[in-house]
Amino acid sequence: MRREMPPTAGLPLSPRELFGAGGGFSRAALEYLDARHGALACSGTACLVLILSALHRLTRRRTVIVPAYTCPLVALAVAHCGLDLRLCDLAADRLDFDLTALARLCDKDTLAIVPTHLAGRVARVAPVKHIAQGCGAFVVEDAAQSFGARRSGRSVGLEGDAGFFSFAAGKGLSLYEGGLWVAREPALASAIERAQNETLAPDAWRELRRCLELAAYALLYRPVFLPWVYGRPLRRSLKKGDLPEAVGDVFPADIPLHPVGAWRQGVGRRAISRLSGFHRQTKIQAERRLAALDRLPGARVFRDTADEEGVWPFFLVCLPDRQSRDRALNRTWGAGLGVTRLFIHALPDYGYLRGRVPPEVCPNARRLAAHSLTVTNSPWLDDAGFERILALFRQALA
Ligand SMILES: *Cc1c(COP(=O)(O)O)cnc(C)c1O
Image (tube, rainbow, N blue to C red; front, side):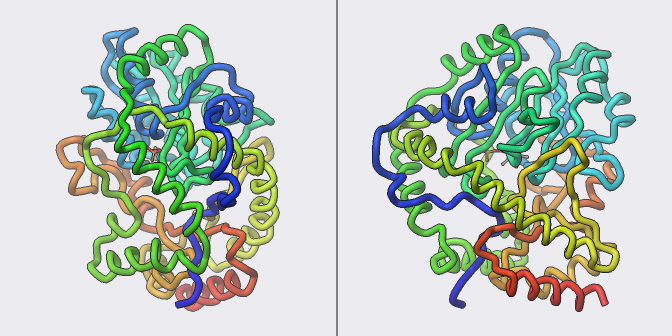
């Protein structure tokens, strides 16, 4: 194979951006969001740990409600803080909470509710805030996949009490690993800062490793090298039938907690100046391709309503049933076209999370896991490549 598409539209780094003054990324990222209070940590997961630790200190409540379909790291972060996880199903045919189920789950032990902006889309936060106010809980927005997404011109992550973003490889703007937390009120920001000062400790070896990984990412995140760094491991996992491993859903339980070094921050600070241009480019491409995906018989693509302006790292497509979805994947997954899946399971269905995740009936989350696949929106996927994907999907749906 000559070329391979990445599964998401990451902002490619230019080698020039590896050189120059360090530091300054938190400030640049906060400015980008037009956010007042926040700071950088080594991952989105670390940010969630800091936020939850700070909240737990303010009240004795211990339950955290998260969507039943989300990143397994969210469950690991809650467990790391010694808090109790509760899962809320998604609404039918939506990516965010079933609000009726959410209202039922809330009680006087609810510490936080975590509405999640999945796949670059914009989740409803206002009704979640309303429910949270009714039971005295905090709202923490998981915007790990949606840095740059807006509702009514305002960035996601700023409507709840706190929020966080991820700069992991594969999430748009990359420091290889990194996260930014934000808080609306200065008092809560100070509390999270205190948790940060007590929790994060410099880790020189891990930082060195991340620097090498970021440099390698800058050099190898291109279609000619992706067969080696992305495609080969993917195809190996698919051959073994280990789907969680294929999409990178398996994480160690221990969560690194350290600051991000000055060099990686400098790289991110230089790259972020190109981000809004990149988002415009991927949005234009998305508008054309969304319409084509929507015309597939029985298919549904998640898109924005009038006041939502999400970002477009990939398209999340729902096919009519598991069989047609699997047929579509058989033709495309591992073929270098940038077709893959988001999280393989609803949280209760990961074997390795058993014991950390409560069993929960979550039919909508399970249906989304069973019916969906993702198509990259990388600018490297040209029209011919995209047409090829459409043709293979049409065969699968025939
Ligand atoms: C990736 C992700 C996280 C965790 O972010 P990291 O930076 O990888 O720790 C949390 N929530 C969601 C929805 C994610 O996709």
